[in-house]
Image (tube, rainbow, N blue to C red):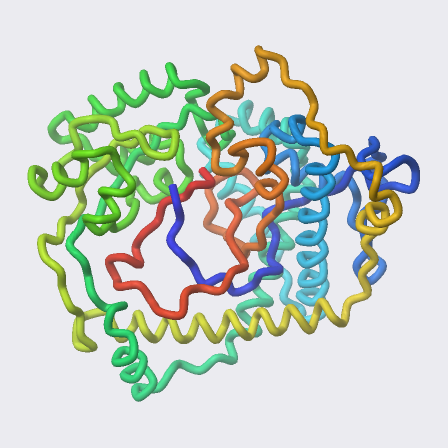
Length: 430
């Protein structure tokens, strides 16, 4: 489900990956096989191994990397490696600043991820093996993420809260940002036919439809707690962790996002707390939707409306923190001595990268028919972009395996969303 726009404070905190690189070693072309112990890049003399990049690509592409051409795969590796370089630069800064987590904090986060994945010990071990992760590499990934997060907090702690006059001016200059449109706050249980390795129990359309109908019948029973069922059955990490809590949709957004008739039914037929009587297809998944709250009319919020001042305060403070963090990272990257051997290999052998993709057998194509609709790997042409570890903050609340859901390093919008709209979640990276 698509996540709410968040102010990403550290674009370099890419603890999403403990990753490596194939095809950048001293022998063969950029698309050749690789020694996992070969060095892809160095940061102030500290090597980043090819093994790390390949692990990141494997985790993000979820098996689709085998369908990429050498050209596409090389592009993906370059993107992954760049983010790993940024991560290593910031981790080294954290070490110098003494912003390091304790072993107890690392262990606690590792156990939190493991429990939050919803996997049994056997399933956890199998998934770790599948993505090329070990407990040691996973703990290092977490350690780096927590260290960068601590560094972030130390640096951005210098930011003062905005003054009342600035808050008032911001409100007066952005009146449309404080209008709540007619719409509804929805909760959802997500059933996904794709095997995304995050506690999924369904692997295809038939299994997904069967489970969705079973879960749907269960939540329709009087006295059933929707949040409890969501934590037990949802196949989306966000909704699972939040007990199904999803986002606020304006009426127009519902009409665009859902099949015809769903929006009208929610707004005219349903009462707060009721569950939509049918499965709702959404981005190649099935949703069981509950109406949490309905707003019948548009509402103009004022500075005296509860929460508005705090919303503006948070937005302005976070915007400053984002700028400070980005500036700090830019200086750190400029000061670091970085050697990118993969990039050098591509420059040296630019004509050895074929654009032809491997042939896919009918059986493989059929088994991947659902996966191809995934936002991460929608088709082979986009997979090179999909597998790059988009820079993210150290999301220590992530409930999946060691690789957290990617964030974004794009600046947040310059106007805050109304409180209702700002509660939009939805993670298309499920």
